[in-house]
Length: 459
Image (cartoon, rainbow, N blue to C red):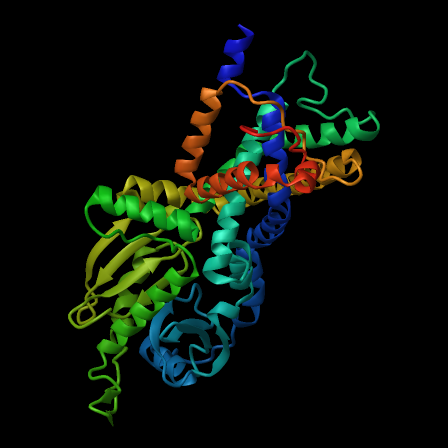
């Protein structure tokens, strides 16, 4: 019976060891993601505060047309073209218009009556956009996205192994569902760590998994699988890393410029661009107004000759989003696709992202996410305290590897499933095992420091 039990699951020492390694790598990233994620939760409030000076302008006469407003924004950034016109939410609000040159985009605030340029800001330098990139890629582009994804994947392993270690094996709820606050020393910190992990793990796992579609590796993995299953290239409502976002910007810019006629350089001779007509904007806005789409509503010019104008609700609560195409000549609505009409995968990711960003069910969503982030911070800090208090002098303090045991089939099946679901984690796990078994066990100093003494096969 004892032998059978060992085959079903590894001994506690093995799980504790991998839990330790996962935590050692993840803790700095957990702290970083918890802090930046907590800030990003309040993006609507922060951006409303930043835009407050342009939310209630003095308007004493008739408003300029949307076409004139767009032209004023384009003039404010020489060489740019219209990328998106954001419908103002009130009659007294400054109009926000995004113009661009290739991959670069600038948000221009225009007075709706006088056409005065109130403010220009690089889209990538907007405060919450910077926080978003700090959170998802450490402001390091594709390498940063890979690193954050790797940390998120190992945090999933850390949480699952932590739940296994927490699983009650004796009676009593103290140290299981509530900390024994009167206990002193190491027991207090152990309880704080274990109980916090129990209460935050479920939602922390949800936040980690719902963030994966943005990641460069996992998001590309998902997109490739969908392309094979659906039999055609997939267009998604989210980007997979910074490079993907820049490619989409450049493609939209190139399509808009194609509407302007010939390229600026043709057979070595400079040619003037004919002006792009923004007159359709006013017709389109008249059509969109009665639809009462969730804000913000963005209108974009055609992506090439013969293409329609497009409009979309870009609501932070993604299940409220709608995509539309419109005829620029007549203002007629050509097509409408609501969130409920999207494929199941897109809807699942949309719900997940909305909850992840704290926008699905108002301030309660923000509060729940904030409490989870604070719980993760407490989990990380308490783990460091526990490690430091029990760490023997002169060694890392990793739980000592046990002697080889019979194969734990359920455990290895779980590892294989996680490796397939999280390919980056799977590759890194194989690399760590290879280094430990083929290199470190043969180096006496490293073997002693890592607690690998006596290990020649499985850890």
